[in-house]
Image 1 (cartoon, rainbow over the protein chains, first blue to last red):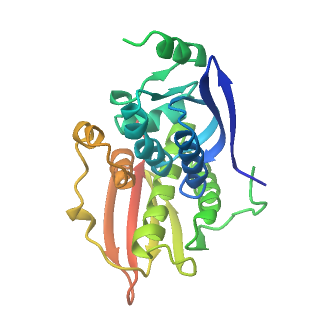
Image 2: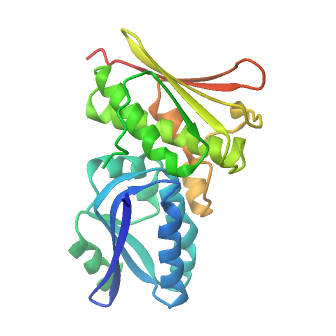
Length: 117
Length: 146
């Protein structure tokens, strides 16, 4: 019985990762593999939809930190959307809104890719 | 989704493997809920225990999967205390400063955030030494007075 799942799809030529379940030190390597695969295939515009993400620990946040620099060097970004209050609180405690665009919904994240400041 | 185990006692011992973190979370959240904490605080306590155990697995035990980590929960009138013990390598947590997050993020660093979360979310954190090589971390959360 898996406690973490990632589903991948596209939205307007942007790669969307739907995270489901619990992102902790045990499941974080799965997200690492997914990011690495996207980067290896030159996919640098990524939205992480957290609607079904039940839980995140600092191990999960560390995965985002590991890839954001590479992605931005290639003129892409990792934007996060649809977070629950519980998940957003963890990001917020660690100051992540300073570094990442966190949007209410996926459509807003898509718009931000299409109309960057 | 649960492991199918019911935790009714106040102690849990796990092997030092990250696939045991789910059991730790289920155990701690159930006990914190029983102690009368609301959802937000239960989530905070649970996260801190996850972070503490992860640190032990990765750092104190250098990812050795066959060591033991123990958790003991002491609910009191005004607080809950969670004691986590391990027999791993010592480190001085007081020497690890919580990072300035702006600087941390600007350098795209990763790692070291678990301790920062624990210090942010718990009301009191302190360390003691038990018998032999046992090291203990104490996480304390007060019941809100509101």
